[in-house]
Amino acid sequence: MTTIAQPLQPGTPAPDFKLRSTPDQDVSLSDFRGRPVVLAFYPADWSPVCGDQMALYNEILPEFTHHKAELLGISVDGAWCHAAFSHDRKLHFPLLSDFEPKGAVAKLYGVYHPGGIAERALFVIDKDGVIRWTYVSPMGVNPGAEGILEALEGLDGHPAGDGKAQAAKKRDA
Amino acid sequence: MTPAAKARPAQTISAEDRARGPAGAPVTLLEYGDYECPHCGRAHSIVQRLEKHFAGKLRFVFRNFPLSNMHPHAEMAAEAAEAAGAQGKFWEMHDMLFDHQEDLSEDAITDFAGELGLNTEKFAEAVQSQKYAARVKADFAGGVRSGVNGTPTFFINGARHDGGLEYEDLVKAIGGAV
Image 1 (tube, rainbow over the protein chains, first blue to last red):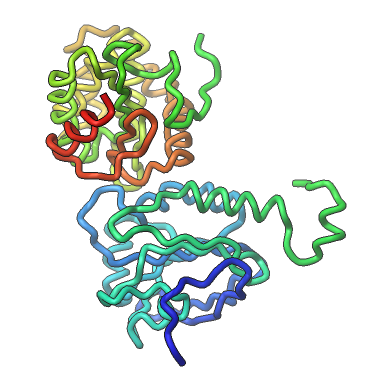
Image 2 (image 1 turned 120 degrees about the vertical axis):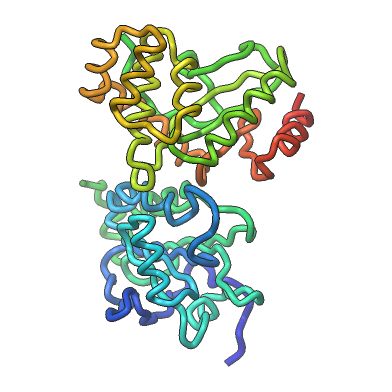
């Protein structure tokens, strides 16, 4: 299989994967079918800034939860590294370890950087497992969260699946 | 009474904002910051130098962006600055908090209020009842919507500054907007 260095685009079914979330637990993308998922690939744990990308998402987590979305951070760091990082930053969402084979999931999504790390890439996946929003940030730039929130709002406004029937109905809470 | 706090985007500066410098200045530097964040502490002295350098041409606006999971005192410090603001001493408390980042406990903050000559009873009540929590939350929400991606995040005339945070970097970026 050739690696395409292009991030997967909206409309593409999100490839399933299974990765370590803690030293003794695995998480599969398909575990979250039925709910939106935000996949946040990032280069590495322990970046030397305060309020880095993961810490920021941690603060905004209630807004993601409001959309019933699950947030998954993914980097090539090992599960023990993630455990220490997550503990230090008091993160309330899982960090997945794309460690062995290194960067396999990042490659699958077309966001593996030749430097051996994942790009800062964001995917919003709808409840049916289809990518609905893709964003790759310039390497040095933390993308923030406003794009994710807009994409999640878009999902709420355009329910996937039984399109016609639902579109005809008014959105109710 | 102030109206219910509303999230404002980085592009809109209103009368409710904490601003210093001339309102008609050609450049508005907006910071989203956290009183317990060491990078913001560093930026604080840089901003003070920038205000001197661009005196008369720069308006500085500060909005709260406390990273509460990481910084246990950040939220209370932000609310305390707003409580001091209600007594007309926002900037005095703002400077005090950044100058004493190493201890932002409730006791310390109460002492600051005393030093600044605030009505400490009123101040303590506002802090304990979290009177300004909604305002801080509105700052935070507006920041998230505007692309704030960590602390500090600066906006120069409404555009997020993605460059360096050293004095020289900011002089250059602001100079380009004057």
